[in-house]
Length: 191
Image 1 (cartoon, rainbow, N blue to C red):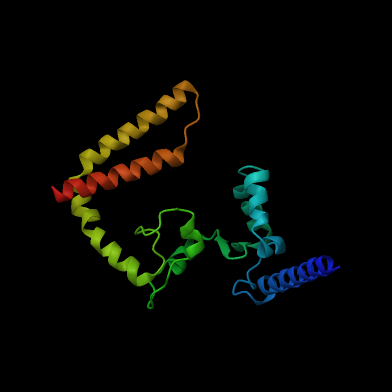
Image 2: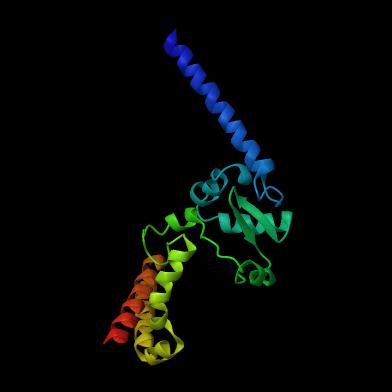
C-alpha cells in the first residue's frame, strides 16, 4: 500500500510539474509571443523528430513553417529562426550592455573553457583579446600563401571522396581545417 501511494504521489507530482512547465513555455516564456507550432514551443522532441526520426528534414520543415507563420518563428522552447536577412543587423548589433552567451548552445561544442565556449561576457572578452592580434588583417594577409595551401589540401580531400564515391564527413574536414589554420596562425605569429 505504501509503495503504491508513493508511486501515485510521484506520478501526480510529475504530471503537475509537466503541466506547469508547459503552461510557462506556452504563455509566460519571453518567447511566448513569437509565432510557431505549439509543440515546438513545448518541447525539443519536435526538433528531434525531424532531425532524427525523419533524418535531416528539419531544415525543410523550418522553411514550411516560415511560409505558414512568417519571417520570425519559434522552433524550440528557447530558440527562434529568422528568415529575414535584413534583421541580422538588429540581432547581431553591438550591444550597449554586455550580454552573456546562451549556455545550452555552447554545450554542443564540448570544449569547456575554450574561447568560443565561454558564456560569461567579461571572461570571453579577456580570452578573445589575447587571441585577437593573431587574427588581424595584416597577419591573415601575411599567411595567405599558407592558407591557400591548406585550402588546396582540403579541396583535394573532397575531390578524392567524390572520385571514390565515398561519403565525406564535412564537419570533421572543416573542423580539422579551422584547427590547422589556427595552429599555423599562432605558430607563425610567435616565431
